[in-house]
Length: 190
Image (spheres, one colour):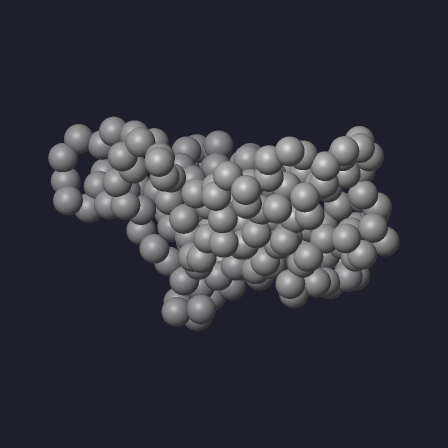
């Protein structure tokens, strides 16, 4: 298994819109890098609130996740370039980019150091072979203070691992529940 370099990422990975990694003054970097691709966070977010809008006891259940825990925010509608994640909370968002992962590649997502050094952690499960779509990201604010996240700028890096052999069953073959997801996708259990 090997890690794909910038030229291999350009050739083998479906990324739309594809961006080169150039200096952008005052922006958190994004685009292809030496051995990965820095994704941008879009403008739409779902921010977790500890009390559901309908009142009552708040219990987070991944098998029955309640959308009432989330407040939807679009920076375009607000006329701003960022959102605020409350202390010790998180937000779901989606990448600007759409990905098409080849059958012999697995992508791992890691957070960017610019945000990690501020106590913001990005979590995404691996993008399996033949997974397609916009990536739903989870950004945790581990600090006791509100934290800014800038829309349409870099948030995390995908690292692409090319397998020595093609898998017997891909994400597309098993009809994965997050295949071709559109919008911010909450947890699902089949």
